Amino acid sequence: MSATTPLRLGSIAPNFDAETTTGPINFHEFIGDNWVILFSHPEDYTPVCTTELGAFAKLEPEFTKRGVKLIGLSANTIESHGGWIKDIDEISGSQLKFPIIGDKERKVALAYDMIDHQDATNVDSKGVAFTIRSVFIIDPKKTIRTILSYPASTGRNTAEVLRIVDSLQTGDKNKVTTPINWVPGDDVIVHPTIKTEEARKIFPKMTVVKPYLRFTPLPKEDTSANV
Ligand code: BEZ
Figure 1 (tube, helix red, strand yellow):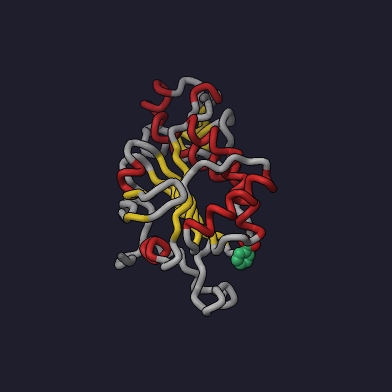
Figure 2 (tube, helix red, strand yellow; figure 1 turned 30 degrees about the horizontal axis):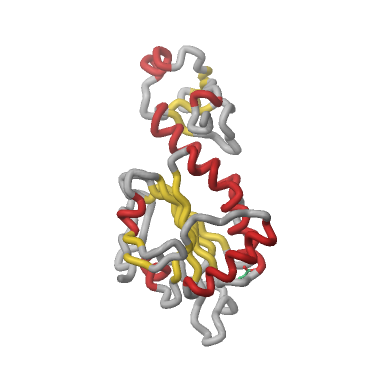
């Protein structure tokens, strides 16, 4: 299994079988009818990754309420992950329950192009490139909806990942897009494909700033954050 064509937004998430800390999985079966966030880490027992996994574990209930399953990946064995999870829970006060893939051979990392090509120092003791901090947000049709890539030195922002989920799920349901720094409850943008005449019927409170920039209120209760 390797990435033959680059993964883009709209690509079907490549399927794979893997060992995880909660048992073996087939990725497409794991997705089932859910949204999934697949995120990678360079290595076990590393400081930034430890803080990230604790934060994802503590925010997991919010993802679950939105029908989103979490699954991590790190380029070590599941036995190694098991010991590390105890540290993560001790340090973060979390109870990490979601699976972490044991990707020692980098099979999944290669299929998802999670390998670091830029930072030559981000290598293991044998000089093999580590995974970077990738995030893939995948919808129930197994379509990749978001790809984020962070360098090993920069921890991610779990609130931002949740915000993207809210934007995607709310946009799918309401024919809207979300502006810069939007959070649920803020005004949204009427989808550019809807003609203004029709938009006025669907969104009676719409404000036209420019013909191509039309805002409408969308109360938090009408977003995916209303859970
Ligand atoms: C970390 O998680 O702290 C880390 C891992 C690999 C390289 C640099 C930092």
